[in-house]
Image (cartoon, rainbow, N blue to C red; front, side, top):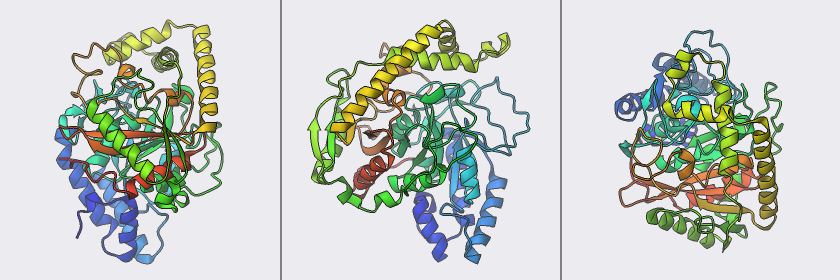
Amino acid sequence: MSDLTALTATQLAAGYETGDFSPTEVTRAALERAAETQERVNAFVRIDQEAALRQAEESTDRWRRGEPLGPVDGVPVTVKDILLQRGGPTLKGSQAVSGEGPWDEDAPSVARLRENGAVFLGKTTTPEFGWKGVTDSPRHGATGNPHAPDRTAGGSSGGSAAAVAAGAGPLSLGTDGGGSVRIPASFCGIFALKPTYGRVPIYPASAFGTLAHVGPMTRDAEDAALLMDIISSPDSRDWSHLGPVPHSFRGALAAGAEGVRGLRVAYSPDFGGRVRVAPDVAAAVGKAVALLEELGAVVEETDPSFTDPVESFHTLWFSGAARVTQHFSHDQRAGLDPGLRDVCEDGAARSALDYLAAVDERMALGKHMGAFHERYDLLVTPTMPLTAFAAGVEVPEGSGMERWTEWTPFSYPFNMTQQPAASVPCGADERGLPVGVQLVGARHADALVLSAAHALFESGITSELPSTL
């Protein structure tokens, strides 16, 4: 039997259908993998072994009867501990959140997975309230990278990325407000998609407003498309949801490598010289771009030519953080991550006019990128300009940086514009640490981004990806 923890969700469903293995066998293997890597990686806040095995047995019975609830019935999934999941607390990485219930409601994406028979292994780690691009918190400690546990998994969906990379379930739900599925996907060597804002319903609404997206974190683009077909379903609790999807995301992958032929691709290796990119990262991303060209894309090296919107992003992001903690007591504030406490104070000092000025810059950036995508179908950049650094710190040691946004210049702009953006694993640096390439599409072009990513996977882009623990 193949290593069950190495199979994708698509492969698992096929094996369930033929009877080659059962959801119970797969869930036991995933739970064992979660347990054996937890001490070194710390991907989980909670592992729900009893509940997972019960769900797996129920799924095994459905498959035996030929009555699965959906395409992920019996597939082990994990959920970032920012999203509500009934039956257990959502602690958001914070000592300020009480574990007392009742915890009787699922977030929309979690509810859709439950309706389709998914097996929930547990909740994954996040920095406090998902505020930064690495995963450590006063409540749960630091999450390490499955490729090198002394290095960060990235964040803020670092636990989800680490779980998928380590083999503790092929599917995870993450959130992304400034790169939070793409950063850890790049560092851990997995795939992640930040969909167009509103494509996946969110409830409760994020304090970070329309910067925050829910997205799939998976082994490949095919599994992400599978997950998108499920979690994009409408939910009346989210008034900003875009409504029913007029097509199947999995169906959009049918063209395979041919789906790339003729695409107009803008390649910006360093945002016009503005970003310093590590040589190993630049080389791996360059190979991915060359592969797109071999597949028939029309590639032009160019730059989207916008001014770095980091200060406007800070206004929006730090104000959101201040809102999260607005009613905290003195003792609750004292227990916060010191970096979060700093940005909350910064955000609270910004005025409504500052906020509206940031919204104005955001709208101008959205208009600019809308015009850019009239000329180009995709924008390709490195996901990150560097590979994973030491775990437990916000910025690389010795870098002189202060905030996580200084080393994530390729990610947060596309939260401001609400565009779909994916990270595809494309190689490794000389130390064996993964590198990701980012594919960005126009708003609502999620299927195109998934199709291009799938073509890269089909063409063997991950063949040189190093193994994990």
